[in-house]
Every structure is written in C-alpha cells, then in structure tokens.
Length: 252
Image (tube, rainbow, N blue to C red; front, side):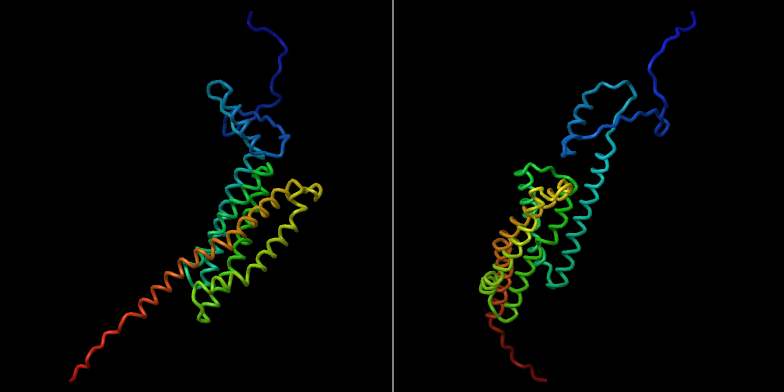
C-alpha cells in the first residue's frame, strides 16, 4: 500500500510572510477597553504550547493603538517644548517657565485619577485629552504670573505682588475653569450620542486635569514663584546694602 485516500480539512490557500507560512485569526473585542483585552489575549497566548519554529504576534487595531500611543507621546513632548520656548520668549527667563510647567504633571495626576474613579480606560481619546491639557493648564498660570511681573516692574515687592496678583486673578481663573468643566459635562456623562466612546474619555481627562491644575495653580505656582524670586530679591537687597569702598584718586 502506497497511500491512504481520505477527506480531511485543509487550508484553502497558503499565505507566507517573509517566506514563512502564516495564518491570521481575526476577532473583534466586545468591550471598550482594548488595552485590557490585548493584555488578556497576550497572557493566554503565552500559555499556549506552539510547535517548534512557530510564533505568534498580535496585530490589527491593537498594534495600531500601540503605535499611536508612541506617536502621541512624542507629540506631547513636542508640545511641552514649544510651550516652554514661547514662555521663555515671553518672560525672558528660564526659571519662570519651569515654574509654570509644574502644573502639567499635576494636571496629568488629576486626569488619571478621574479616569480611575469613573472606570474609563486610557485609550486614544484620553491621550488626545492629555495633549489638549498641555496648553490649557499653562494658560491660567501664565495669566497669573504675567500680572505678578507687571506689579514687580511697578516697584512692588515679591510677596505683595504675588498676593495682589492672586487676589486679582482668582475669580477669572476659577470662572474660566468652571465654564470649561460645565461645557464638557454632557460629553463626560456620555449623553452626546453615538460619539460618546470618543468624547467621554476626552472630556473626563480634561475635567480631571482642570480641577487639579486650577487648584495647584492658585497655591503651588505662587509659592514656588515667591521662593525663587524672593531669593533673588533678597540677594539684590544685600548687594545694595554693601558699602562702596572709597578709593583715593591717584595723581599723575
């Protein structure tokens, strides 16, 4: 007997990737958290015993999301750098822009905290909201510090300038943040229709970042400004108090 004739199942066509045979298994995630689905799939695939020489990889939307995350991370760094350069040109200082950029990490803390509180996954819309926060949260700090610098140019001491600037800018900053938060509430509650899966995470991130950054802008930024600029003011005062050495003119 040379062979045995039988009907068996086989592939309709043989696909090759880089010369190696390959097969594609497609599926659609039923949940909204693509990252959690990908992590669960990866853990299960790691437990599968594959034949010698066989490998597996996850592609499709999961691979696209990972690539997009990396691109948005670079875009966020570029946005921070551009904002920093603009503030350096505006304030003509390297220290003051660094003080203002302190509000960005705290905005991210509030955004991530609200995502965890609402059980919203960190996806592409949430990262776009993070990118938006870079420009939004720095605006309040710029408005505050710019007024403080104006008072100082008019001859007001650092402490008095910070107190007066905070008193004058408190209401506008709170009203601006509150208006933005209330405008985003419909999106955050998911009542915007079919686009809620995009708008809801974005709105939650912006609202959380605004809440934390606004509070810290009114407290932390003036404190850091007073510490840095107050030290400079005291140093200049000590230099001004030093007696000038009187030197006798030398005759020729």
